Image 1 (spheres, rainbow, N blue to C red):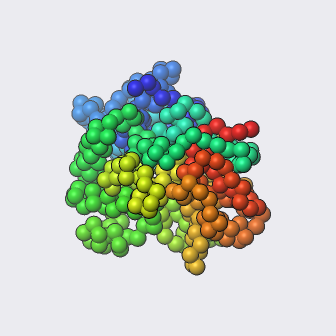
Image 2: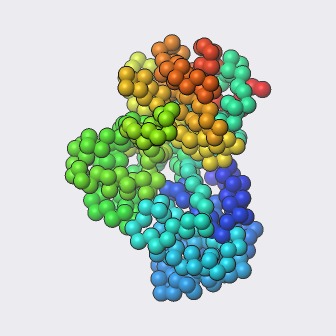
Image 3: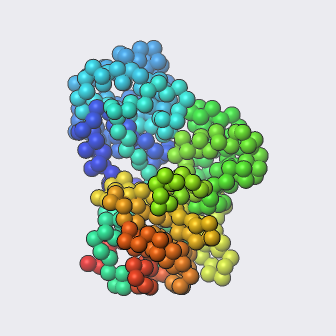
Length: 418
């Protein structure tokens, strides 16, 4: 497969030029090592991987000497989560010499959550979160929907050739490089092996989880409720996990970057943490495989394709989280729900406090009731409400009412009319 350029590369280079240590983190097989190699190619870099037993043994025996063996260039340490205590020696090396671009670390687990983590490298390192390919990266176009919205979208002029079948194929394929272009059978085999390795090797190693079968059950339950509210007690019962242990299992899944969570939005910052989070398996292809859903099962429009709604919403969440890494606009993602049942699937809160609401629908037409939650949010926020958009699988844009529009999901990455 031809090497796909990562849109986050420019930001990663800026981080390397500004800080002593850069940490590239993300799930296994998202391309961290490839990106690290690209970044190090022009920076007098030496590469070490802690997946190699001899290298790891040397780091254990003499951590100070290990991290200081290339003082005049960039030291790249791959899979640093295999030896989290090494960060203490990295901290000491940085404190002696705070020049930018000294260390580039990659990790398949969230270093801040790891048992045995000796130092967070706070004030010394900046993390670059790498996710699977976005649809824009796969197609070689710069996808930054938030910036396009802020610049102004001619909604009524938007058209697309992407149909329901194309969306179904995108969802079940996901963004991992290794599955692009594979047949259904080979893709399924890859996802199965991937999930099994994470449950049987990585989770016990980095999170102390000793029952891989329970972890697998929990992951399948989350996939079956893609983009739904996360209710710990319900998950614990369904997965056969003691209520006192469910938080540890969920933490393990998050540590391995397998799920994304959206916190509830409220207009009052002091109550932002009130309410339930929504959870999505971070890659739509993995979510579909865990739910045993194929592209063909997502095609019917007679109501039998009941998986499409959640999978499509999780797919949109994933695309916007990917784009946030390189967007020219800073924004946070959350979801909105009132006590009387009005809800908005996604809320983008920009740095200046302006709000964009997004509702995701699996159908191809726009109906007035699709805009109900967005109307409620608009009326509550007043001038803070920059707009509300219903994203669906149709082919044209649509103006519904004041600051309320409809767009095809593909508008997230396709070039828009000027």
